[in-house]
Image 1 (cartoon, rainbow, N blue to C red):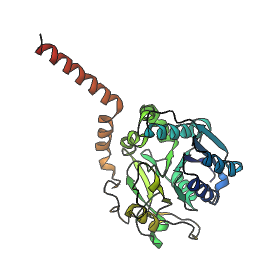
Image 2: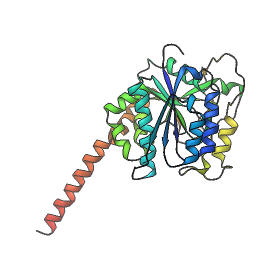
Image 3: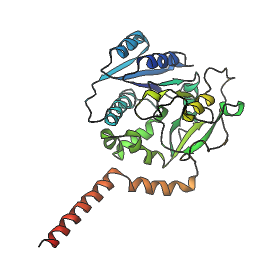
Length: 295
């Protein structure tokens, strides 16, 4: 992985057994020793602490945070952004692969992430990498990727240092601290290019979580499992661009450069500062209207 530095960010709170299995999958990643493992734990569950202690010698950086936010989304965003801050601002990572505790990673996840990050690093509109897919596993799909226009998946995705820096410049990071971090970032991410594998590099087992389908037999989970590369032996990775299809998610779009201006317009309109100005003007208008009515 010469030339680029990467980090893995694991976010955990309450599901000790799933975390243990995730960290096992992380330990089996090819080229695991080339990246820094950061674990951000929201404290409160003793069993999670025991799992972390079990894997402590494999964890380079451990950050423990109290869940003092006003809501679950605020705590989730706070934990994630703290981890990104360590990786990008303190360690100088070029990219960060962030995963939640209910995910399992395929063995070549780091190889895929670094390959794509290196290939597209000089593309001005490159935003990040999503590791999920719901396309059925196939010989063509497991060694290929497609260009998409989408945000980044909370369960497993790579953010680049350039995207982190740009979102700080646009004040997106600060605005996402008090709510859903992915919703705050999505409009910016859609102004550019995200890369997705045609077959998934993770399994999502989040049916016990707060913001996912509660039925493990939901098509979402089954499709991910049926797309999962897992530990299938691959030849020397030689990932190629191959447009197989985008049918598996309605809001996942093929990347087309000519549409970028449209998405930049949406980003500007939805920018937190613009929304705040609109709300201020609307409030002033309502106050003025009341004064005229009751004068």
